[in-house]
Image (cartoon, rainbow, N blue to C red):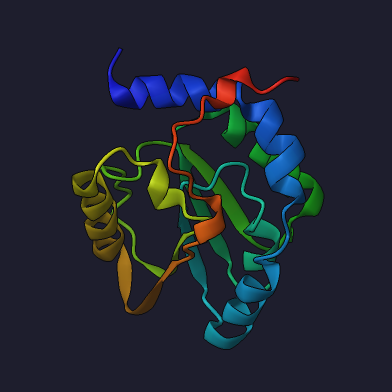
Amino acid sequence: MNKLNSSRVEYNESCHFYDKIMNSFEMDFSLYEDLVEILKPSSVLELGCGMGRLFPIFSREAKEIVGVDISDELLSKGEQYYATYGNKNAIASFINADMCSFNDNKKYDMIVFALSVLKHLSSHEERFKALENAKRHLSKNGFIVIDHTPFLYTSRAIDWTDAKR
């Protein structure tokens, strides 16, 4: 099994953990509320969006929100989450793809890497690919937001699939 497929399996199996723990994390909400209020993006792309917990914040200004993640389980939950909490005037799309190679031939006003999502990539080369891919999707006057949350980093590997349900 290659690294991407292994990660996909791990995230699908840990969907319950993400739902209970990560969706209760709101410390970064004020950052994104301020960014949306100041930048007023009409379109947002979130790479590594998980369940799209930030989509309701993005939908305060954006008319189009696209989330990319490799976990079809998280994306499915995200569609349900946005149907409940999102702004019905904004179109939200959840796409199952790799953030390093995703391409929808569109440009976005704001591209987001939230909650240190880049740490989930296995090498510096993959991180650079993800950043280069974000730049390709960025509108002329757009912004790339990289939320680096150091306390989420760990020096040892964690197998999230062992988290108890």
